[in-house]
Image (cartoon, rainbow, N blue to C red):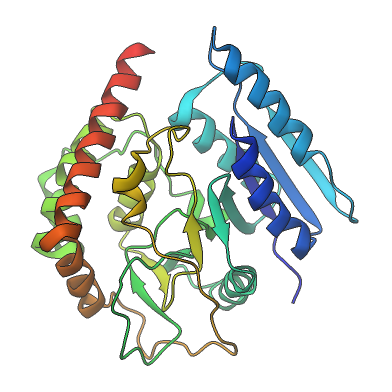
Length: 308
């Protein structure tokens, strides 16, 4: 199977970038798009590391059409990433998005390629994620479920990204909130409600909450694999929204998925999966870590927004 076009999002982490870039090199995609935000104003370390990162990703030794979007100025996570994805889909109709801290198992690429092909003309499916943070995964009858999705290594189509709205139009409408709540059910709705509010009010400096909202607002589906295909290696002092050991405790090691893929019988959200995931992240030690991380990410995002 030909590897789909890849958008590689990089910034100021040479070590992380090199690791992920090597996994891309092994796959030898024919179409590679690289987007790099600019160094933050007055940050000498950024200037050095952004330059190093750009040199790393220029080292392409296979037959490949390369497109680059290297920013001169820093736009920040919210604008830089969302605009880079739009730029990506201005050139192609479907593809994989990888950030510099998302280290995929080799099977991730064919997993995405297979499902991009399968659901290409099915508007009900909006996103394919490589993440599954559920620890207890016994009893799956298929290779993936329709869950919450995720952006630690993912894929989608231009027709889906066209539904993305950074302003989150409609969120203030009670009818829209009820529509979102009906899909998430009460537990997950409570979990995301304040983040939706913060993103809508532009006090949260991120782009991904708006993507998740777009999926729910449009009553679409997102895929999660039965095993975790992508390990996030960015939980250190260099991460934009990272908080060391606490966040690392929420990640799982990457695994390989078996082919051919076994598809779910029904095209609908797997609430059993969501209940299990919620149970894991809302009880015991994992709950405390999860809540602590969310609070810190939320506060960090608000601080970054105020500084701009």
